[in-house]
Length: 319
View 1 (cartoon, one colour):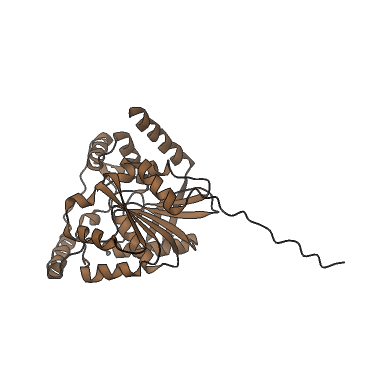
View 2 (spheres, helix red, strand yellow; view 1 turned 90 degrees about the vertical axis):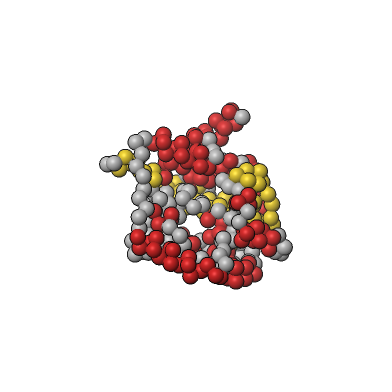
């Protein structure tokens, strides 16, 4: 097992060394990430989860085919080394759909597939519903439908969120060394400490007072407007494109959140959704990249070679 883990870490660094830096300018700053693979053939956009960054996909990328696929792996705004939203903004998942469309237009992507984990899976599902003409296929890892609130809680949630945003009391902690941050990431995600170091490459910064995490503190605040079941469940009827929903055996479902369990039940009968379960915790794509890669490669047909480009025969018109 130790040899397998060591090889995985070595391969993660190889992937990272092959990757190119990516920076997309938006009206308020930059969304950054990495990309690798040829610009011909398939395009896959990969979106990480809450408080994560694009390096969380490195273990999975070591097991995915690279010959015929371009991978665009993003740090969402306020995550990794992407710019934080303006101070007058608040953070909501629906805003990321706007960001995704801006990114698509900047990169001139006409058709692509999506892979999203957790928050990234929810965002991918929303984008797929809104832009079915742009998405070929969608993979959502342990997250597809947003957690919803009963109607009776909406107003009280607004007040709670507003008070939290206006009070603005959250402060990033300072740490004396990176080892402490690394230990926190490793234990929180249930992953190897060497893998955690890869995430820490984009998740920590050194300040005059010590090390701290880079994420936008507003990500810790409650969502200003939570969706209800009346909004979320009709959204599923807009999914025209094939979606692979991967449940982690020890992921969100073990929380027994009523909305998540009801969502699983609703999605299990959706004609365009394939639902499978893979062994692992919520960060199953880091913990079990082999299992995820096999399912993703088959669903997105990543190992298929593109059709050869044929030139039209020369039309000789005489002398």
